Each structure stands twice: as structure tokens, then as C-alpha cells.
Image (cartoon, rainbow, N blue to C red; front, side):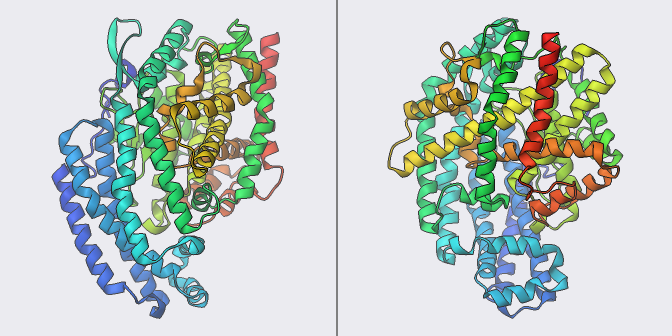
Length: 595
């Protein structure tokens, strides 16, 4: 990707040619996958109990190809739609793909259900076969859902309705939020600004701009709350209905199973974060003092400290890739390829979804970075974060498609670790106290956002699901009340909410819509990443260990993978160790502020 000196990521758009040259090619790919799925079903359906290890390995190889083909077609559509959500051709492709992707999912699910339904002794016999050793963890993970799995016809029906009914509400929410725009003057006259663009101003140094941007966001989003609440209410009600059919005892369990984390451990982690709310308030008070304010308003929370200069795109690319080189030259080469091969879209524009993500498609296709870059320090951190995902996806392509992807919580560890390495690198190369102060302030702001704020969001979701389970409709007023109360617990008297109350902010958070309880993955990952960062100082072979950790993908449990980094999830002091690292930074900033 050519370097650009323009601001805001202007002109940095990806090419999807490495996936498919056109929507027509994506259609042809999906049609071939359909034919392969029919052949697969005819060949293997009903035979698992009689297979030996070699035959099962053959079936799994074909299954991996089907998984990859399905995800490649689905992500091509998503990548195209997220950068041009009003494109009729892309929307037509999505409608055309829906039933075909569902058919592929049904074939894959039928194989999984047959595997899940095998007697324990038969499954154990096959799991012990050396030919499937590389897939053993993925196969074992599937069998954890045995108590909550329905019959094949019921599973097929749920897959088909999810692709239409549930996805329709998710698409409506995301498309509606992405196309909202309001005339706003950010310094160069009135121009239409999206939710994503207005949100980026909350991290700007100019307090007046932050306050006006927050007010504009409220003006833009609040009138849309009835529609957005209807989307969320319907999605939550639907999920709870399916939970009852499956027999899930509580709505967080599907996420725990996916993450391979025990419910008790997750709740202990959330309790530990809430117990450390006073630590967050200490930092917020330091921030208010540095900003010469009696207390922060909601729009001040992300304000940068120090006097950071805008970081244009070309410099951000160099900083991020150099930070990866501090860990390993191999990681730096993986990161650089995203830019050289035009696999990044960083330009904010109307019709483009907000936020940022890294899309890992398959073990045979490259990953892509989606950003809305606005020249801020936080945008550079976001770039490193998504590149962390990207290096993880690429390094783990040594696995099969069946064992490639990690659970949500583990996926967020490399991305968060990448941010911390970027801060180390920028601090080292700057040599200036003001830059160091700004960077460490940015890290603590990330702690507020990734640990504390995400815990607020988890508590919000827990309460929303509990209300809906009682038969209470999730109206904007009720959702707003929950959000205000949970933020109030976090902020205490360190933030004054009267003028810009956060009650409406639920309406612009896509994670609640797309994946329930997704946000605790950020909490887990950030705390683990702080511990991993400490290991870079303690383990002389950390670089090799880290590459091995990335290569696991989904082929081992989180506990096994993190043991590679010297982290023991069974250690009851694991969260205290992370918070000690955070407190060390808070104390340093308190001392600098008092000096």
C-alpha cells in the first residue's frame, strides 16, 4: 500500500482481489462449495461410528475445506458491505448467499451433530487415533455441548431461521447506525459526520470539540433509540427462547463454552474488576487534575493528556510494524504484508461501518484490517490492536480450518499485547518525557476502556437479559437506566454525568447485537496481556514462546496455550498480578502529577 501523508486515512482502501475478483466470482465459489457439500454429505453421513482414524482424518480434511469455503464467501460479502453498506449489488449478493451459506452450515452442523451423538467409548476410540491428533482438541470441544444439542432436524431449522430472522435484526441495527449522519463543524465548516467520525472526536485534545461531538452524537442517536431498542429486544428475546430449547441454565453459558472458560472463573474476574473500581477512579481523578478540572465529564474520559501531535497514516504504519519487530522479525514481516498487499481499509466515509476489526477468513486466504483512522494516538493503538489479531490469524494458519480459530477471550490477547508493545516502542524512540507521559496516560485510558468499561457492558447485558427473561420489554428508558447505573458504579464521584449522561450509549455498541457477552473477552485479554507483558522481562526465550502461542490457533485450550507464556490460569492470584501492574502505572502518574 503506498504511503500517504494525508490525514484521516484518506485514500487508504483495500483491494479484495485476493479473495474474489468480483461478486460474480464469489457466487461461483459458493456454488462450487454447495456441490462439494452435497458430495461430502453423501459420502460421510451416517458413517462416523464405523470409521477408523485414517478415514476420520480424511473426512475432517474435507470438512475443513467446506468450512473455509463457506467463511470465505461470507466474509467477502461482509468486507464489501462494511465499506459500502448502501451498494445494491453487494446487498443482492448477501441475499443470494444467505440460503446457500445456510445449506453449507447445515451440512457442517450435521457432521458435528453426528460426532456429538456418538457413544462416549466410540468417540474416545477415534480421539485416540494418531491420524486425528491435530484435530483432537477441536473434536473434544464440540462434545462439551452434548447436553445442549438438539436433534438434527431441529438444529437445521434453527440454522435456517438464524440466517434470516436473527441476522435481519442484526443487519438492520448495524446498517442503520452506519448510515446515520449529522452536519457538524469540526473546524472546517459544516459537513456530514457519521457516528464513527463523531466518536473519534471524543479522543481529541480540544475540550470544546469533545463536548460538541458528544452532544452531536446524542442528538444523532437518541431519536433512533426506539428502533435500535426494538432490534435489541427482539434479539435478546430470540436468544433466550433458543436457550430454553437447548436447556442452557443461564445466558452467558454459550459464550463460556465458546471461550472454554469456566463460569465461576469469569464471574470471579468480573468481581475482581469491580473491587478495583477505586483504582480506576484514582486515575480519573489524576486525569481531572492534569486537565485542571474539578471533575471529569463523560466526554472528558478519553481526552489525551500531554500534547500529542497528530500521527499521519504513513508514520502510524511504521510505528506499528517496528513495534512488532521488537518481539520478532517474523511478526514484523507478517504485519508489513497487510499494507504492501493492500489489505487495509482505513478511510472514514459515509456508508462505511464504524469501529475497527480484523477479518480472518480461512487458513488459505489472507486476513484484512478494517479501521476508521483519524490521526489520533488512540487510532495508532487501534491499528496495533487489529494487527495483533492479524498476526495471530496468519501464524495459526499452520492448523487446519477445523482447529484454526481461538475462542473470543484468547483471540483478544495478541491484539491487546500488541498495543502494550507499541507503547514500549513509541516510548523508547521518542526519548521525550511529554511523549512518555502521553503514552502511559493512553495505556491507562485503555485500561479504563478495555477492562473497566467492558465490565460495565457485561453487567449491563446481564441485567438486560435478566429483565427480558422476566418478560419485561427492553425499552430505551429501561436500557438507559441500566447503563447509567452501571457507569455510576464505575465512575463514582470522579465523573460528573449531569450534563452528558451516558444512558443512551448502549444504542451505538454493535457487540451487544452481534455476539452476546463478547465484551468480557476484552477484560480477560487485557488482564492476561498485562501479565504476558511482564513475562517479556522475565523470560529470555519469550519471542519463541510467543510465536508458538500464536501458532496454536484453536488446537489447544486457553490454559494450555497461556502456559506457553508462563501464565497459569489456575493461579488464584492471576488477576491480582495484573492489577498490580496497572496500579504501578497509576502510582507513577500520581507522582508525576504531584511533582
